[in-house]
Image 1 (cartoon, rainbow, N blue to C red):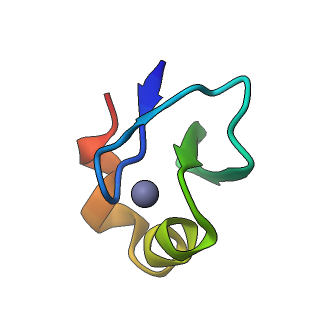
Image 2: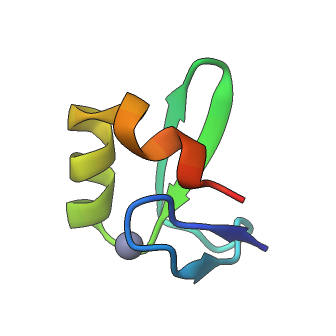
Length: 50
Ligand SMILES: [Zn+2]
């Protein structure tokens, strides 16, 4: 399990539909809205990922 860095919800990376990459790391999201927020300001959210 990992965390959606935007809303901090637990995410199963095997099932995650929404993904992004930033600075060589993969991030997973619960929704397109969270992914969009991350993609706009990845530096703001990246540190929240577990
Ligand atoms: Zn989310």
